[in-house]
Length: 441
Image (cartoon, rainbow, N blue to C red; front, side):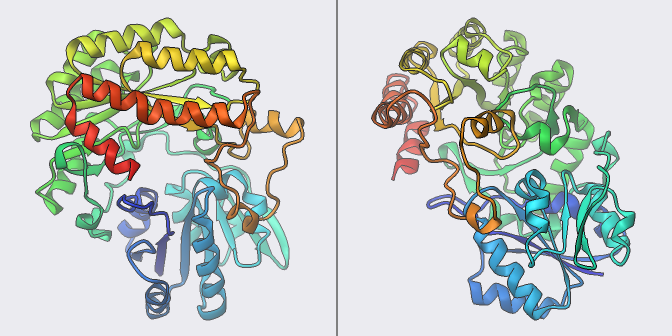
């Protein structure tokens, strides 16, 4: 079959378009089985150009990955175009379609929704395109009726999946400049999460649990990537893996592998499952920074979010990072429901105490999460149609907390810009400071 997969318009000003990792991963099995797969990126082509390429491809299936954001506009636009001009099934997958499958399949421009991880489901759907009732893990239309099949199993062992087919994209187009101008790419190393944070969609999409690629599988994917793009200088592990510290022995093997390829890299960790031994190993093997989801300086808020960490753990880990010279980056959420003035002040205070780089953002009400359901009980109304989600700014200040909008905006700019400028200049970390300036402009 001819399969056309489309990466929607998701490029932010001043940034490279995101690597279509999800599309690459679901392509692995059908690509191995001999199906003809092409990936188009709306970020790389003008509207007329991508529509012309869609017609020229003449696919049997047109697939879209979806995010809960304005990028849904391009998914809708091209789905409608496909229904009007192509003899193809229109399939949606990704986070948004998985969080709201019945809402998405209700749209007349969508034929099938792949729910959750699509490695097996998408491949089975292709093999049974005329008999979707045989495929678990999808929603579909049959004689003007909507059908929702049973859930499908997630891939228990990621090492059994085919290697990522990097050749389906022009890797060079997705390499971006990182710290010090390093030529950088992203690399997935695990999926899922065993924790129960009430604000996160991870458990809904991945079904709970943590499933890592082995160090050997990661090495193979990396070798294949470097074969295609030998000028690679750095890897962002933190973009795709929240829990590299879950298995210390594996973490150290990955660290050694990245160092053996002479690559700089970054990772994402939790303060409750990392120690000085791992952090020192990472630092010695080329890790540029470690990213931690701290979320709040108020223990009451951390408990409310079911984060599973303490303030003391955050302080301990950041003190270690600062001592050994590994850049620590903290992520904070502000405008959390029930957050008081005192809670927000405690977040500001903890950010100063940690003495690291801060990334602060407003709480994002992803559909289906426990915290969003809490808000809905309080009267918050979510969009009821996919088109309405295109106008819903997930990242803006919604004023869910007990703080005024002025206090929230003040905290946002203080943490992201004033605090970071002070910390980076005091540490004479000019590479990160110039990255901050670039993001600001």
